[in-house]
Length: 465
Image (tube, rainbow, N blue to C red; front, side, top):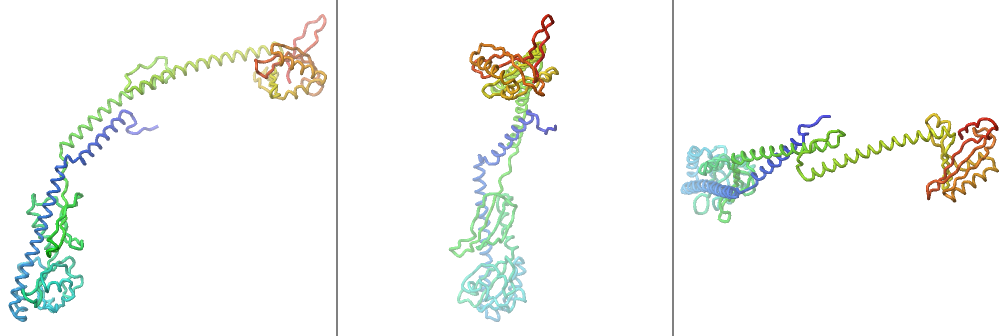
């Protein structure tokens, strides 16, 4: 039979204690915010970082909006044809100064593009864009349409637009910002944070919940957010979400936990060794050795009671075994004496139960061979083997003995002629009662022979039915 690595009770207790201490220590170190101060500090850091990033994005958008407003006022001061020519030169210079912007366009009130940084966009129609109508009455920030006829549809690109001039707008000037622009603004703002915003997970979402920016590692911590601009005052309403990583676990608690685990494992090893010795002592009490095992100090009262009970149980078992052996020896001697008595006297013993009408007896021939099986038959069957006129004599003897427990009756009967082994013989019965209150009667039977005059008396022959 094979055993596992920790089949010893000593090693098993040491392992269980070490595991319990280690798991409990990890739970305490992982969830015990005596670190509540650390938690509030991390929350404060995340809130400050979210506010700073939101303000940085808002300032960058407002800066682009202010630049567009200046461009719009400059172009509005010129005629429509001159404005288109001047816008072409201005937009080319704008692209050189702002390579992170995708395109910049000038459109009239109908949405037709008059000038653009990309010549392919001239003549396109922007009237179907959702942001165009709003841009005629004031500055607007939105996302590029998925299928704009202006050809400036790039997923996640942003549109910043402003009207031409401060009076009734003659058109709109708009610039498209690439996703890289948002990433650059957030990256520049992160560098102004303490420790350069290291470890922070930053996400910028637009008003519909679409992600405009993601940066930083995956952090499973509290989500702290701040809004980019006040929506009630015309802000874009974007959301900046920041997650702060938990501080790394200090090395000293980990070392202390390791030392505690080793100490508890050693204690479990010692306790398990003592328990193993106590169990070995208890097991020794169950062995039938002449020399009793040396008692040891019991680890607990229950273990002491167990060994005491085992000692008493083993002693009782040994005494019962000794009594059983003595009874078996006495029973063997009694069986031998009964067999000798049956052989010497030539008698068979009958047990007659008057309550059930059954007779139990031993076959004489087989008794001589040592088998001596018991036979059971009905009392009526026994009486049927007797001569009719002798049945009354045996019945009277049984009734007399049953009525008088101390009486013993002798009766001689004849068996009927036939083919049975006892046919045509004379049998002598001696009938006596059993114990008081019992319905059993006992009868000894042997073959009866008349004594010969002047000759030796023959030995009786054993009855066999």
